[in-house]
Image (cartoon, rainbow, N blue to C red; front, side, top):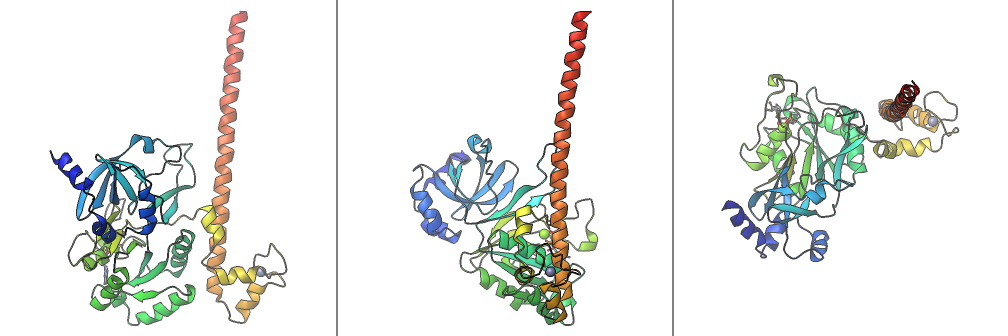
Length: 373
Ligand SMILES: Nc1nc2c(ncn2[C@@H]2O[C@H](COP(=O)(O)OP(=O)(O)OP(=O)(O)O)[C@@H](O)[C@H]2O)c(=O)[nH]1
Ligand SMILES: [Mg+2]
Ligand SMILES: [Zn+2]
């Protein structure tokens, strides 16, 4: 039977080189040495509801998740890039992650009691996150700042790729602009028609490194994967041809092993990156403004009109651009909105609780009245 065959391959102990190719490191080896002898490590390369594709060596197997893990209160669910232990086509445990790229989901739609700010894991154990932003109407420095905040918060090194550079006369101008908002972060132009640029990305991933591609729908993430792979392994589609409510061409997250040795994870475009409270509070994309804000005369300074505002001084002297301050303030406002929503939902929960209690009291009264009759 196919399953038994798979399992026998999985059990082969001579896997070290195969694992290294998939990004295995001493961090995981240490964990493995303390684990049950009859399970083997594998890397999650695809998640399809309750079926997980895992890779071991060159082969991909489809496995399920042990009910015990599924029902755990902590609910650690494998994501693409995770290292897991597999025994008899079942994932029996998930290795502690090096890092996890995650974002806040809007929540609340799936049920009244759904958490407003649920963290959704995107990918685990990454060496980089490639923030892909097209130099077409997708271009939006404020959005890049938000992606940066997200990656910093997750402890993942960002690299910015300005795709569709062929659509601009002077792409270097955009590179400079983005470099100014992302101090110390590599920013590269990228184009479908520029093999050298694609090669540069491939080199960043060699050997055995893993990167996730994030960016809006239509930014060119899958196009890049196809170029790195040297063949069409991902379906792509022109922005204008996208139909239906989803609009996203890519709908699944998958990890691909590239011929050059690296690994990339394709993601569906993120329509809106919700920042969780902790992320927004960390605000790491604006360390310059944060440092200045700490020196303002008033501790609750809004940096809009207050006397003794160090941030406004820095803008007057040209140290910081006013556009950058605007983005900082916008992010702050979003944080307030998130808080407000959290509080609102707490109020609603409280209200519902009281409605429930008062109904019970009413029922009880009615029953009592009936007894007396
Ligand atoms: N001119 C130009 N067009 C590009 C380039 N890269 C991608 N495109 C086009 O942009 C469109 C969208 O590309 P995709 O790769 O499907 O975008 P995506 O980021 O994967 O989108 P989702 O899967 O929806 O998240 C396609 O029509 C591509 O041909 C580029 O470098 N130059
Ligand atoms: Mg895609
Ligand atoms: Zn101030």
